[in-house]
Image (cartoon, rainbow, N blue to C red; front, side, top):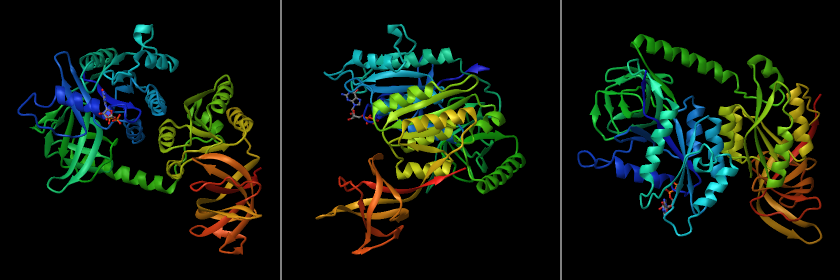
Length: 500
Ligand code: GDP
């Protein structure tokens, strides 16, 4: 076993400088050092320093990071959390921290834009302390470096620190074995066919090797490094492009080299069979109802939750009560908590972590809802804190019997408003999903937050009163005792159903 270079991903809030830092590091340490500076973007690059080498993944952000994990591969050893010194910690900074923690990947903090006059490094450090990332110089364990992607200040130190962190991680692999690794990106080039960028994680990848990815395999016809040079072999932590695969894999797919083509065919056949079977049984991750059975079957020790609420106060109250529910053998582990609607990144995180998403006074975006359906992630929505707590408690104790369930029957988008004297506001709507029934109950949802619940007062198609309106049609909806409807709101209708 020999040490291998660390693989690093940058994460942080939008515009805090992830791309700029990646570019500055590349331009300073990689490009132009050797033969005339070929800039070859292959999805990752290596920085080779006297003291060691670092591999940077070129797709920054926690969504890409967790999407890769969702396909089976944890490619990163260290996350650089980029925080702009003039803005401090923002919502996506917290998302990034939780995604890194869920993956058990250590965080090094780069406070960027320290060249700006309004940079407040101390302020950022205080934020970090609150988030349990106390800087080393304040007695904590987190490496924090001030940098500027613009003036290059602090970049040397950041790289030093990454190497130091890597040393502590003792990343060791066997370079003599058949290679294994992960796909960083794949594309079809009009001239070269299927081009796949891979990161070798262990072993050495050689020309002529038979590689299997997903249900595809092929003999490697060319290996190209991050400087655009054709090479004969690639060792651990090297990102390279390979040619020769028979199909297009996805980012995050693991790959492996097998001894011969026969073995490759066998593996691909087995995987196709497995996929066929999986298609027949819908994916289902953990649910509150099934949790106690899964505890026995899969020896689970904790119930993982993602908690989202409309405002900070409710979020804190809910999280505090949920945390108190941990019982002897089983813990409640809240892996992510923020205010705001349920988004796609919440669902991806829930899917890889096998967590249930709990929403209080909020809803999921249409895309998040769809993704949750595909991934089999359970979203539980509540309008009363006590009910959320009671459900989780019952789930932990294996006693969960849903009594009254809200069954969503339709969802319509408000596109136009009509003020009708004596009647009030009528919302001109388009029905996106299900059907709107005159007798159903209704939620009014604005920016994924529930702001009204009650009854439908009127339902019209053109001038006619109607009993129901189907998906794909327009209608006018009036809500009982509520007129403050806005364009862009959603009206969600539901029934209450007793479940034994
Ligand atoms: P990303 O969304 O995190 O990838 O952020 P970008 O790298 O796109 O940077 C956002 C903006 O901040 C751009 O306009 C950059 O020019 C600027 N920026 C990035 N790093 C620095 C820095 O160190 N100093 C200053 N002054 N501006 C920076």
